[in-house]
Image 1 (cartoon, helix red, strand yellow):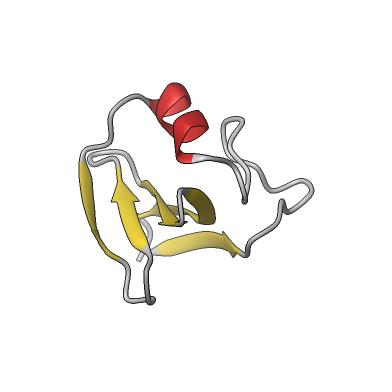
Image 2: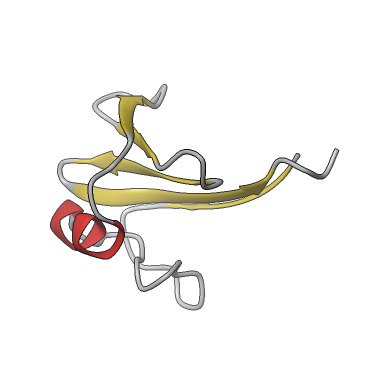
Length: 77
């Protein structure tokens, strides 16, 4: 699998995904993608992993802000 992930508390110029950038609110995230499919722990303290299965992207959220955007291609080994 190949993946691209950007993480951090502030926007990463040129690395937004479908109008969502680091630091955006969960309200904006839900307005863009609708209701999420699954929320679980991310492995980081006080951080949730929002996934939109079957689509190959996810977001980490901390304090109602996007702190990570991950896009993967599971077809490439």
